[in-house]
Amino acid sequence: PSRVPAGARKPRPVTGGGGHVARKRFGQNFLQDQGIIDGIVRAIDPQPDERLIEIGPGLAALTQPLVERAGRMTVIELDRDLAARLRQHPQLDVIESDVLKVDFTALAVERDWPKLRVVGNLPYNISTPILFHLLDHVDVVQDQHFMLQKEVIDRMVATPAQGDYSRLSVMLQWRYAMEQVLFVPPESFDPPPKVNSAVVRMVPLAEPPELDMPLFGSLVQSAFSQRRKLLRHTLGHWLEDKGFGGEFDLQRRAEEVPVAEYVALAQHVSLKA
Ligand code: SAM
Image (tube, rainbow, N blue to C red):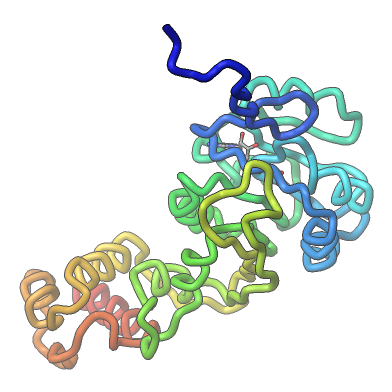
């Protein structure tokens, strides 16, 4: 006999509107708060003929007001059913793909586009890989506006004095100016995520330092592998291997060293290499 008492209600299906059932594995939380949608569109302030690319348009909650202003838009959606719906929209170019496989540089070059404005309410399960993927294509980016977990944005913008300062802070701050532009509570979405969200604006620096990216990446990764240990332990061997003598104060923890010093150290090491 069933343990469900007679008359008990079935759990409500998690719908994202329009009959679509939200897919958890694709990180689908659909925006439903018009005030928040308006706030994001105001923050982006799209102009006619700008090259907007949206990651994960879903049910087009953001896409529609954006494309009304921009005229045309390219959207990247992995969910096959959603991509099929989006293709019905006359102003959208739909790329049905995993965003991590999209070569933004090739896209911009092929289409002879000036710089891209990249936007999206990102699937939170792959938000950090998406940020790193775009870093590889930052030369064709004008700016990025992303909805992310608030906690991720706190790490992105943190400075050494703050507990959230981490590898993500250093890896992004050397290349972007970033600011949180909007706080977004869980109930703004259907279904609501378990965490608070926020929107971040990321603008590539006009004159970034010259950096050997793979070297910088592995330096920062080594430093933060044990963030509370002294750099003497985490970076000492790594620097010795690179022929670095000791002009850098290693009696500090990774979380105490400003971004500019990581940049200077990486430049110094690559000059010696
Ligand atoms: N933009 C919509 C909104 O604000 O209501 C949906 C946002 S939802 C948080 C994330 C969207 O990204 C979903 O539409 C999902 O199908 C899509 N998505 C998930 N993984 C993806 C991937 N790897 N590449 C492209 N899109 C993806």
